[in-house]
Length: 65
Image: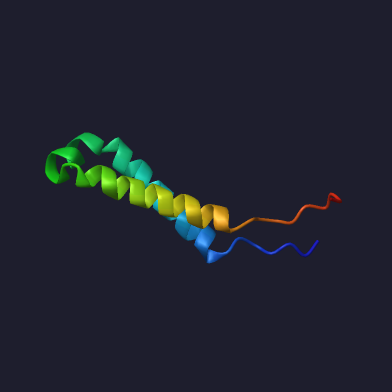
């Protein structure tokens, strides 16, 4: 099979999702320093990460339509 490998946008999306997970772990201290901008930043990171991961469709299916 000649399925393409994951693109760089897939890996960048995973990195952004990892950073947003770290933000969730340290949410309390970030909230004290940044306030409501913590949630805005988290939503932006998570949304952009999910967009980049979902943009890469992955390997094609061998099943007929």
